Image 1: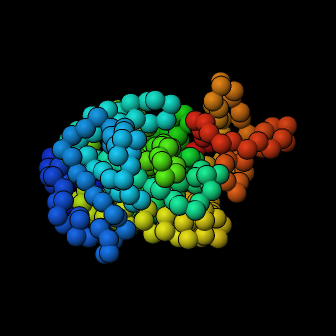
Image 2: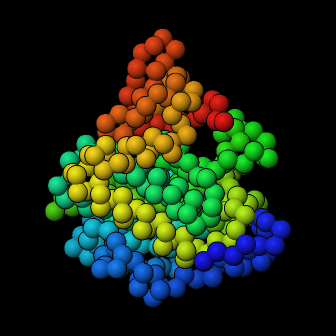
Length: 302
């Protein structure tokens, strides 16, 4: 549901009040549950610490209750988790905060590295569709939007983070599962965001966006890409995911610094994605490195 505010961007009280209403669970179930939509189960809780933590615990205790493509949404996530254990919280009803259970039977685990990128591409696509904002992906787990009118920030340039992804593996008796957490800033005002590099759709979009419309578009985008990926046993090239990710990945072609696990710092040109979704970086000596994990900073983000 979109409504164009008078005069363009309107991040004031009317905007935030519009999108802080509770989600309509019945309407979302009717639109997203099988056989109409991609989901096998949809739960909504008023508040929790972390939807990822909740689903990881639930999968460990009762995996039969959370089949492939189950989703848990929190109206208020009070202790969300990002990469490297970073924590964050959002005002109630101000963001889309959800986690998806993926149990890709028949897909080799070495292909699982594509799942955060699949989520990032799907999130960017949903934001483009519903909010009419040209969102892009920052490898491996952020979604950014450009704001040329804002001052440049080191490592970000004129871009700001509007969404984040966290993928966590969970072992179950029937095989590995992945809990894929997705958080999108929707109606937060600048003072409600935790860092200067973050932004919400209330500032970035020139249309008003309901959380419900964004949830529908986001989960359909994830479900469609995941279905195609599973059909080819995780072959990202065969299902088109590799090409779509490369086209939307703002990191490629940029000079970057990567803080790798263990404390190593790597600087070079982000050249390409590998067959497993790793980032290929060519350092200043011309040596190619395959980066599987790390915090990436764009030296020139625009």
